[in-house]
Image 1 (cartoon, rainbow, N blue to C red):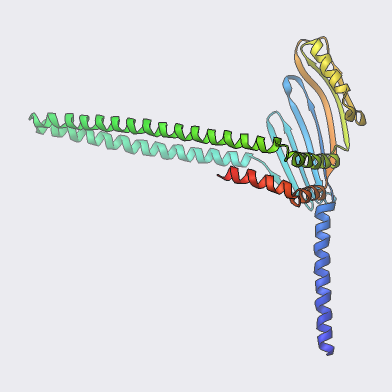
Image 2: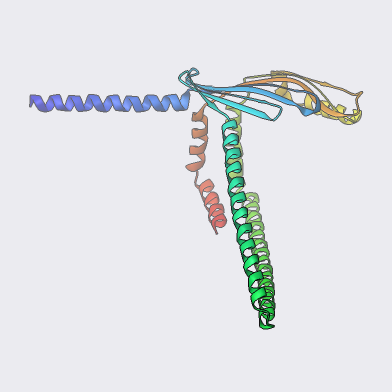
Length: 300
C-alpha cells in the first residue's frame, strides 16, 4: 500500500507541474502585451523614413525594421541573439541563377547553330549530287505541310483563347452572384442583429488596441485653400485626436499638394481580447448560421 500511495503522489505532483506549466504558457501568450513603436517622417517628394520595433516578453523577442528610399531592412532578436533578415542574399542568388541560365541558353544556341550549319552543308552536297527535278519538288511538299501545321496550330490557339475568355466570364458572373447574395444576407432585416454584433466586437477590439501615445508635427496643403480649410475643420471635429499630442498645421499659400513632418506611434496588443471577441461570435447561433451560408456559397 505504501508503494502505491507514493506512486500516486508522484503522478499527482507531475500532473500538477505539467498543468501549471501549460497555464503559465497560456497566461504569457494571452496576457503579456505585444508592444509596438513606430517613428518616422515625410519629406519632400513623398520620401518616407520609418523606424519601428515590436517587443514581446520583456524584449526577449524583438523585431526591428527600417524603411528609407525604397530600402527595407529587418532584424529579429531571440533572447539577445540577432538574426538578420535581408533580401540582398536572395537578390544575389537570383542574379547568379540568372547568369547560369543565360550561359546555358548560350550553349544551347551554339549547339543549335552548329546543327543547322551541318544540315545546310549536307543539303548542299545532296543538291550537287542529285541534279534531278525530283529533289527540287521534295522541299516544296515539306513547305506546304509546314504551312498547314502552322495554320492548324493558330486555329487551336484561337479556340483555346475563346474557351478561356468564356470561363473567365462565367467565373465573374458567379462571383457577382456570390457578392450580391452576401450583400442580401448582410442587409436582411433578420441578419441586422448579426451585423451589429460583429461591429460591436470590432469596436471592442479597437478600444483595447488604440494608440497609447501619438505625437505628430505635420504640415499639409491640398493645393486649394478652401479645401485645405475644410479638411482642417474635419480634423478639428474628431474628438479622439484631442487625447494625443496631435499637431496638424494647414498651409493656405502653396498651390501644391504635400504632407511634411514627423510622427511617433506607440501602443500594445493583448491576444486575449481577440480570443474573447472570436469566442463570443463563435458561440452565437445567428452568427454561425450566416457564416455557414456565406462559406457554402463561396465554396461552390
